[in-house]
Length: 189
Image (tube, rainbow, N blue to C red; front, side, top):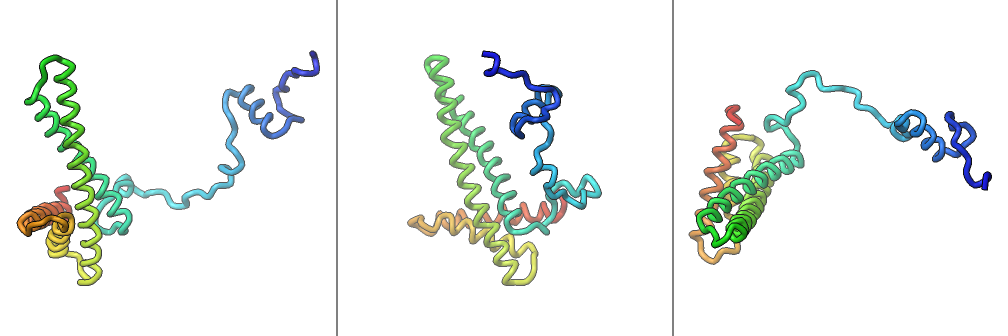
């Protein structure tokens, strides 16, 4: 029975690598950094100021703009749609407290994701059209935002039967995205 169990020496010398890590953990309460992390490349240049840590301006690359913009608009759409759903659920009510809570949750989960998905898709179209129009025109101005917004809203409702809904989405997207573009350029956002 004595040969089956041996105490681990505190230094871990003479043990395989896996057991040395265990001995290190048992003696110090932590594990030393693995070899792969010791030899990992380090970032040579650290940010010089706190302002360099934040995403700013229109100088970002296409993928960064796309990811950042879609994430922001999805989150805002989810929050706004969820808030609208909460208000509708409160208005609808329920006979008991369980039905009341169920009504609020159902309304919240119906309108929140719907508005979040819709705004994220329109924003994806907008960013793609904005970069394409900027590349074609060779300039980055407010005209790009207006035309990209109109194209994004129209493309989102391309399968609609009537032209009226396409025109409404195009106009609303053009106004919204040109306003956001103006606010970003002016430093309000």
